Image (cartoon, rainbow, N blue to C red):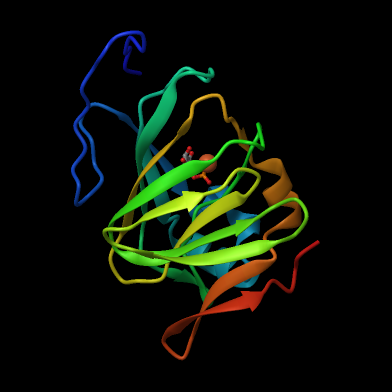
Length: 192
Ligand SMILES: O=P(O)(O)OC[C@H]1O[C@H](O)[C@H](O)[C@@H](O)[C@@H]1O
Ligand SMILES: [Fe+2]
């Protein structure tokens, strides 16, 4: 782990095409770590018999989770589908629900799938060159609907924290699936 001093200035390299960084740490999420998040559990099992693909990865610095600091890094969602569902991140609420986040799309295309605890949902297309503002109180998941990596630079208040449990048990109301070669937003039949 890099030992940055967050009370002074520092510089970090990020490649604005690949999202890669020599200075920061990379975390990879494999299909086996997201088994129950994809709708088609049979398709998951079938793939895992032969391989365990990396679904997404992110580069960040290991920041202090304290108010006043700003966390940032890149996330890279690889292209692909599991059954008819596109590769995506796990997605999370912020533990401090009242914390927003921004993502700048560097490469690729997809959707930011968001929902709040009241069940209001938003699915916003991600395009290269645009920043998406994810408001406070909304869980967020990025989905890659293209055939190249979806690369984004993100930033949020470092105190936010990650709550994965809610999404892990309930799932999202909406899924982004491939239908006749195009992306479609559908209701999640397994939402609890
Ligand atoms: O947290 P996940 O849903 O697994 O997504 C992976 C990562 O991507 C985002 O861009 C967030 O800002 C990171 O804090 C997060 O850890
Ligand atoms: Fe977040």
